[in-house]
Amino acid sequence: GSLQWLVTQTAMRYLIDVNLLQARAKEATVQLLVELNTLVARIVKTPDCVLTYRHIGEPVAILGWSDAAWANRADGGSTGGGLVTIGGISSLKGGKGFQNPIAWRTHRLRRVARSSLSAEVQSLCDNEDEVHLLRFSWTELSGVITNAHEQDKFAAMTPGVMIIDAKSIYDCVVARTQ
Image 1 (tube, one colour):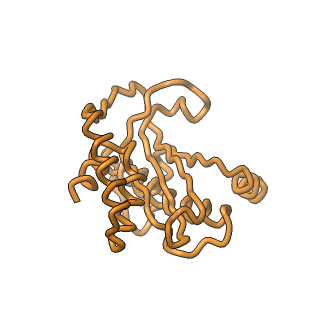
Image 2: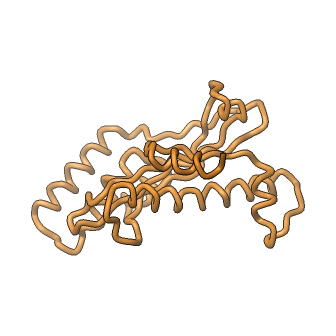
Protein backbone atom coordinates (compact mmCIF):
# COMPACT_ATOMS: atom_id res chain seq x y z
CA GLY A 1 0.00 0.00 0.00
CA SER A 2 2.72 2.50 0.93
CA LEU A 3 4.66 1.79 -2.25
CA GLN A 4 1.50 2.16 -4.32
CA TRP A 5 0.89 5.59 -2.79
CA LEU A 6 4.48 6.65 -3.51
CA VAL A 7 4.44 5.60 -7.17
CA THR A 8 1.06 7.20 -7.85
CA GLN A 9 2.13 10.49 -6.27
CA THR A 10 5.73 11.18 -7.32
CA ALA A 11 7.85 8.10 -8.04
CA MET A 12 6.35 7.13 -11.38
CA ARG A 13 9.60 5.47 -12.50
CA TYR A 14 8.80 2.52 -10.18
CA LEU A 15 5.15 2.21 -11.18
CA ILE A 16 5.43 -0.93 -13.30
CA ASP A 17 7.63 -2.69 -10.75
CA VAL A 18 5.11 -2.11 -7.97
CA ASN A 19 2.19 -2.99 -10.25
CA LEU A 20 3.65 -6.36 -11.25
CA LEU A 21 4.64 -7.24 -7.68
CA GLN A 22 1.18 -6.38 -6.37
CA ALA A 23 -0.37 -8.62 -9.00
CA ARG A 24 1.58 -11.54 -7.52
CA ALA A 25 0.75 -10.74 -3.86
CA LYS A 26 -1.52 -13.79 -3.49
CA GLU A 27 1.37 -16.20 -4.10
CA ALA A 28 3.41 -14.83 -1.14
CA THR A 29 6.61 -16.75 -1.81
CA VAL A 30 10.06 -16.09 -0.44
CA GLN A 31 11.14 -15.11 -3.97
CA LEU A 32 8.40 -12.48 -4.09
CA LEU A 33 9.53 -11.03 -0.75
CA VAL A 34 13.13 -10.92 -1.98
CA GLU A 35 12.03 -9.04 -5.11
CA LEU A 36 9.95 -6.65 -2.99
CA ASN A 37 12.84 -5.98 -0.62
CA THR A 38 15.15 -5.37 -3.58
CA LEU A 39 12.70 -2.83 -4.99
CA VAL A 40 12.36 -1.07 -1.63
CA ALA A 41 16.17 -0.89 -1.37
CA ARG A 42 16.35 0.69 -4.87
CA ILE A 43 13.71 3.24 -3.94
CA VAL A 44 15.41 4.12 -0.65
CA LYS A 45 18.71 4.73 -2.49
CA THR A 46 16.98 7.29 -4.74
CA PRO A 47 14.83 9.38 -2.39
CA ASP A 48 14.78 12.40 -4.72
CA CYS A 49 11.40 11.62 -6.26
CA VAL A 50 10.54 15.23 -6.99
CA LEU A 51 8.28 16.42 -9.76
CA THR A 52 9.06 19.88 -11.08
CA TYR A 53 6.35 21.77 -12.93
CA ARG A 54 7.45 24.54 -15.23
CA HIS A 55 5.69 27.53 -16.70
CA ILE A 56 4.48 26.77 -20.22
CA GLY A 57 4.17 30.34 -21.51
CA GLU A 58 1.84 29.62 -24.42
CA PRO A 59 -1.57 28.05 -25.05
CA VAL A 60 -1.60 24.46 -23.80
CA ALA A 61 -2.06 21.05 -25.33
CA ILE A 62 -2.66 17.75 -23.57
CA LEU A 63 -0.38 14.92 -24.72
CA GLY A 64 -0.90 11.27 -23.91
CA TRP A 65 1.70 8.54 -24.26
CA SER A 66 0.44 4.97 -24.41
CA ASP A 67 2.20 1.62 -24.40
CA ALA A 68 1.46 -2.00 -23.61
CA ALA A 69 3.27 -5.22 -22.85
CA TRP A 70 1.66 -8.37 -24.16
CA ALA A 71 1.46 -11.42 -21.86
CA ASN A 72 4.09 -10.03 -19.46
CA ARG A 73 2.33 -11.09 -16.27
CA ALA A 74 2.85 -14.33 -14.42
CA ASP A 75 -0.67 -15.51 -15.36
CA GLY A 76 -0.27 -14.54 -19.03
CA GLY A 77 -2.19 -11.28 -18.71
CA SER A 78 -1.06 -8.08 -20.37
CA THR A 79 -0.21 -4.65 -18.98
CA GLY A 80 -1.14 -1.22 -20.28
CA GLY A 81 0.43 2.02 -19.28
CA GLY A 82 0.19 5.68 -19.97
CA LEU A 83 1.52 9.11 -19.20
CA VAL A 84 -0.43 12.32 -19.75
CA THR A 85 1.32 15.68 -19.83
CA ILE A 86 0.36 19.29 -20.32
CA GLY A 87 2.67 21.38 -22.45
CA GLY A 88 2.77 24.13 -25.02
CA ILE A 89 0.72 23.89 -28.18
CA SER A 90 3.93 24.27 -30.23
CA SER A 91 4.85 20.73 -29.20
CA LEU A 92 2.12 19.46 -31.53
CA LYS A 93 4.18 20.78 -34.45
CA GLY A 94 7.53 19.49 -33.21
CA GLY A 95 8.44 22.49 -31.07
CA LYS A 96 10.59 22.08 -27.98
CA GLY A 97 9.33 22.90 -24.52
CA PHE A 98 8.49 21.50 -21.14
CA GLN A 99 5.96 18.75 -20.64
CA ASN A 100 4.46 18.67 -17.16
CA PRO A 101 3.14 15.25 -16.09
CA ILE A 102 -0.44 15.34 -14.83
CA ALA A 103 -1.48 11.67 -14.87
CA TRP A 104 0.26 8.31 -15.12
CA ARG A 105 -0.58 4.68 -14.49
CA THR A 106 0.07 1.08 -15.30
CA HIS A 107 -2.69 -1.48 -15.09
CA ARG A 108 -3.71 -4.98 -16.01
CA LEU A 109 -5.64 -4.89 -19.26
CA ARG A 110 -9.27 -5.87 -18.71
CA ARG A 111 -9.58 -8.19 -21.70
CA VAL A 112 -7.35 -11.05 -22.77
CA ALA A 113 -5.03 -9.83 -25.51
CA ARG A 114 -4.36 -12.38 -28.24
CA SER A 115 -1.54 -10.33 -29.75
CA SER A 116 0.72 -7.41 -28.97
CA LEU A 117 -1.40 -5.26 -31.32
CA SER A 118 -4.51 -6.12 -29.29
CA ALA A 119 -2.74 -5.07 -26.07
CA GLU A 120 -1.57 -1.81 -27.67
CA VAL A 121 -5.11 -0.95 -28.86
CA GLN A 122 -6.63 -1.65 -25.43
CA SER A 123 -4.04 0.52 -23.71
CA LEU A 124 -4.48 3.28 -26.31
CA CYS A 125 -8.25 3.33 -25.77
CA ASP A 126 -7.88 3.49 -21.97
CA ASN A 127 -5.36 6.32 -22.20
CA GLU A 128 -7.31 8.26 -24.82
CA ASP A 129 -10.28 8.26 -22.43
CA GLU A 130 -8.04 9.92 -19.82
CA VAL A 131 -6.76 12.49 -22.33
CA HIS A 132 -10.31 13.27 -23.47
CA LEU A 133 -11.45 13.85 -19.88
CA LEU A 134 -8.46 16.09 -19.15
CA ARG A 135 -9.02 18.13 -22.32
CA PHE A 136 -12.66 18.64 -21.29
CA SER A 137 -11.56 19.53 -17.74
CA TRP A 138 -8.97 22.04 -18.99
CA THR A 139 -11.66 23.73 -21.10
CA GLU A 140 -13.80 24.05 -17.96
CA LEU A 141 -10.86 25.34 -15.91
CA SER A 142 -10.25 27.95 -18.60
CA GLY A 143 -13.62 29.51 -17.78
CA VAL A 144 -15.76 28.06 -20.56
CA ILE A 145 -19.27 27.11 -19.46
CA THR A 146 -19.50 23.48 -20.56
CA ASN A 147 -22.29 20.97 -21.02
CA ALA A 148 -21.68 17.32 -20.10
CA HIS A 149 -23.96 16.24 -22.94
CA GLU A 150 -21.55 17.78 -25.46
CA GLN A 151 -18.24 16.55 -24.08
CA ASP A 152 -16.61 16.04 -27.47
CA LYS A 153 -17.35 19.61 -28.54
CA PHE A 154 -15.83 21.08 -25.39
CA ALA A 155 -12.88 18.68 -25.22
CA ALA A 156 -11.98 19.72 -28.76
CA MET A 157 -11.42 23.30 -27.52
CA THR A 158 -8.21 22.11 -25.86
CA PRO A 159 -5.78 20.58 -28.36
CA GLY A 160 -4.52 17.11 -27.64
CA VAL A 161 -2.78 14.16 -29.18
CA MET A 162 -2.00 10.53 -28.40
CA ILE A 163 1.53 9.21 -28.91
CA ILE A 164 2.09 5.50 -29.49
CA ASP A 165 4.90 3.23 -30.57
CA ALA A 166 2.72 0.90 -32.64
CA LYS A 167 3.07 2.01 -36.26
CA SER A 168 0.36 -0.37 -37.46
CA ILE A 169 -2.22 1.40 -35.27
CA TYR A 170 -1.03 4.79 -36.53
CA ASP A 171 -1.25 3.61 -40.15
CA CYS A 172 -4.78 2.29 -39.61
CA VAL A 173 -5.98 5.53 -37.97
CA VAL A 174 -4.39 7.73 -40.67
CA ALA A 175 -5.83 5.60 -43.47
CA ARG A 176 -9.35 5.93 -42.02
CA THR A 177 -9.17 9.68 -41.45
CA GLN A 178 -7.75 10.74 -44.81
